[in-house]
Length: 82
Image (tube, rainbow, N blue to C red):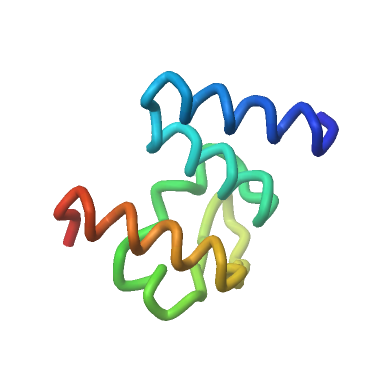
């Protein structure tokens, strides 16, 4: 998928009022995680900016870009996700 196609998906999701979907797409694109790994994202881990993933016998760390971290925390705050 090209960057242009990814941006189009994000813009379309936002236009349809699907902010959570837009953030999921952006998170996957920015971090390179697999969809099955999104469950490791918690408010606490996002605040630290480091996601530790243990999946299919492998361990790895994902570091969040500051802009993505701010977007995710803002979404959590606006939707009262603790």
